Length: 261
Ligand code: ADP
Ligand code: MG
Image (cartoon, rainbow, N blue to C red):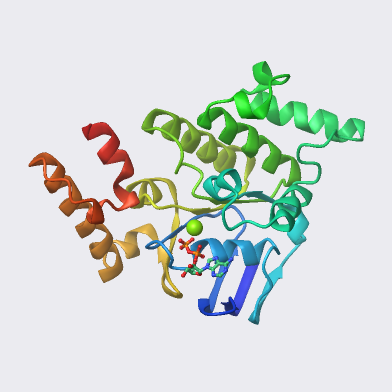
């Protein structure tokens, strides 16, 4: 069954089109990764899916759920640095998670929060301030929060971008388990092409339009994939001969760079 159907979706900002004529559907139980260069419209696409940005054209259809029932983990740098995110955007994000940092009202919600905190191993920090936590701990807390909003669909925008390789590995393990054992459908934006291919069943390659949508196996035969991998090899090679050309430091290679240091 399709959980999500996106039909001819176009999203424009005042001065430019960020997402153009994108169509795809997401099946229940799928684990899909959205990949693509910086500025290719990945975040805009997921923000439109969760209802934070209106569609300019086309439509987003949900089956058996509403946008409020999506568990959403926003791109954390945006929230933390507060740069392009408006207060409304941040507040809306909290509303989507049905509670956020406010007290939980019903017994049922309290129990759910407790269950998710246990699941993600953050119960020991229950009384600590969120700001005191490490990046990895914060991401797990935010994931617990997103899980309180949904039993069906998690949308994550570069959940590992602020994490070191060990914590990244741990987070991906949690996501796989949620997908396999709890049947939660996952749509994850990822800069890290290797992790995306390892984790996901379906790949969506964005470059304003949707350049590819299909299985991981089929993606491996596309020019988009070869270009992504080509970039990584270049960066790797450069690191090995100790030439640091920072304009080639694509975040897709973050983990390799980290472990090479
Ligand atoms: P990605 O997540 O793939 O890096 P984004 O969806 O964030 O890409 O951005 C796509 C394009 O839209 C970029 O050119 C970006 O500069 C622009 N953009 C993103 N957010 C806004 C905004 N709030 N207002 C205007 N332009 C934006
Ligand atoms: Mg983004």
